[in-house]
Image (cartoon, rainbow, N blue to C red; front, side):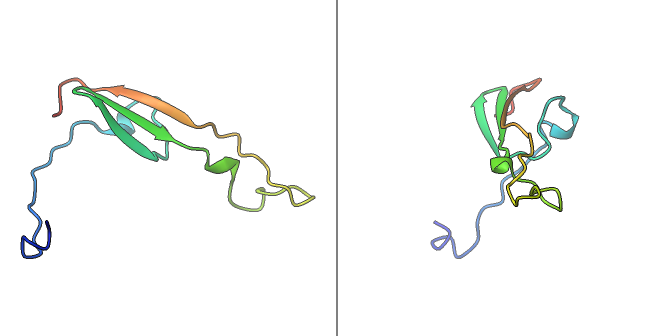
Length: 83
């Protein structure tokens, strides 16, 4: 545990396996990432219950205007095994 190690967690090496900004179809706001295979990631975003920010979030009667943003799940296949 962290307490047993004297408050020092081991620093593990890291390397970039994919730049998700370069992958077509990846949602702008990623809510979760799962490793779903040696060369596969599954990404998900949600639509925040259809909520938006700003002055257009509600109509004239005070009802929420749905953003129209869908919840999406995207599978990304990596070129090489990352783990």
